[in-house]
Image (cartoon, rainbow, N blue to C red; front, side):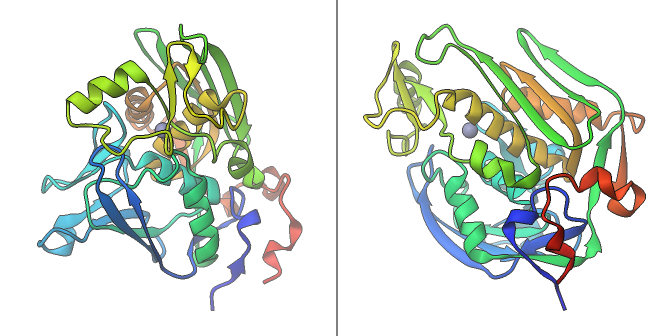
Length: 320
Ligand SMILES: [Zn+2]
């Protein structure tokens, strides 16, 4: 029988693979299409990983399934889009992927009746709450961790990101916009101890009104509004409720990185650092990581000193 575990202890250091306990469906608007999309989260078996399935396409299941892996990322221009070899796509996966990484979900099936993950409120918090509603269970298979062994870095124009060896999964992001409402800000957290939920999960996506107007003219961003996006006009924030955090913009960029980096297919033991980073350079960093197997090693918890992974975690998770 599976061990039941509480979400508060699954965020990084649990030695066993996890999935959700029960299925759940929800609806939301696609940011770019503006269409209502139905999503069903279903438990995944050991070693399934994160698999998206389009239910609106009349093809064999393998032809409409897409593994959420960096090597399947086909477009990063406005969001992260994955595509399988049959040309079937799903876009805007990054906020849902961040919720899976932050909540410590290793295996899950996501069915969608459209090409886009709903934007919800522009953050990952609604997804985290749905995962908590589903419950989380551990599976009888050790989790595999990708351990960073040496510094890996990528630079494109003035954008930069890197992995460095570290004892846990850490993310640090710095942004630097000319716009005064956004400006220069940074955010940093470890993903252990369910930190993602409290630190970054409710940070919303943001856009500048001139870009929003251009996207609309291109038939994109049709579902975007102040209900799911912080909209910045010149140096002012249009949303009447203001910001959820003083540095909500950099926390959202951190959230995006947590989601994008999870397309590695593993929980990463290492430190991510991003400067003016985005979906494109996050994907490049993963390609760079996997170029040489001297950059990393795949380990199970049993291969490493237990204490190293147990910081800040309640001790009762093995009791069940
Ligand atoms: Zn985002």
